Image 1 (cartoon, protein in one colour):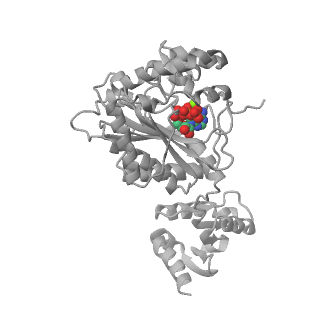
Image 2 (image 1 turned 120 degrees about the vertical axis):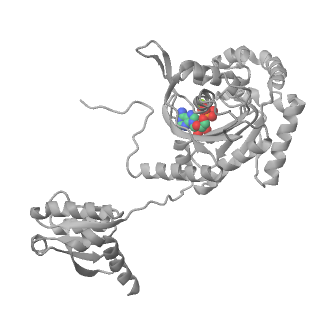
Length: 433
Ligand code: ATP
Ligand code: MG
């Protein structure tokens, strides 16, 4: 019998997992600079939390949910995205209260689940890093958030990216625009894809987000939502653009961009990769403002702004741009034990060295010295400690600095009592030479 991972999932093996750690650590460092703190929510939620916020007519809720009834007959779903769970948590723990900072800035990272047709950059379990800011309508929050996402990509060494923005306006804007869009699309109904025919009356903005080629050709000439913005939404969008200009952040406006989730209001944005080979999955980061969402999930009126980026797509971009990820491939000490009698002492040595805060490894396979030295070399060991039967009897160990080939014999007690000094001594001598 042979088992395989479920379709649309990945095993991350060494060689790849280091890259993930680098991306995650970079995010944590940048987010800290911007004063965002982490919230970790469960990977499953009550179905309602997602359906209410993301929207029943979206692809995510209508087609892609990993939902089920648990043994207690609760309707549960694996989370398909991070914002709804964070908002649920924000409301549940009353993080809008006076004792909390405003805006309340938080980030998350972890797996998301969508039943999609798997392809490069489109998985069923994929991973997002996201950030949310609650409690301010200031357009500077929108711009700071976009700047943070761009900062993150810059820090990773990604260069071929483009910021695309649009505004979806407020409720009044959407109502007026909805009708205009229906009026435009209705005469062309027959040419639309089956999905879009359905969307036309359920949720016409969704048609703009269709991936169908024919749909896309039709929506090119659709009326622009920007012509329907209310005065306050217009002012907000103008300020966002002026602030991007003030920070010298280049951007494009795409008035047909809508996003696949219903909760957005006013500013929305995507960061696209222009690196070769990204294909249809070139959106690496997406987000925007969601001023009604906290109320929708039972909290007080609280505006919000956030984004999510897909780690798999970020990695694809880095590979396409041939960004080199720094990996630490060295170890402070390697213990070569010759003969099975040294087994216990080698264990004590490696543990003692780790106890001093150094990285260390040893042979466990009772291999020949030559093979052990080869392993030490491959691991880029700075020091190799060799102990054989006679050293064991004499209570000593040979210590060799690999860079200089400088070798010295120490008492075992030196290692156990003052390895930090031995380490410095061996590597400083190397330095002076
Ligand atoms: P798309 O239009 O590509 O389906 P989306 O609008 O559904 O994306 P969001 O829900 O806004 O995407 O998610 C934000 C980011 O998460 C995307 O820009 C992408 O980087 C990533 N992402 C979304 N779905 C997937 C997936 N199935 N596999 C891998 N990454 C994904
Ligand atoms: Mg999608």
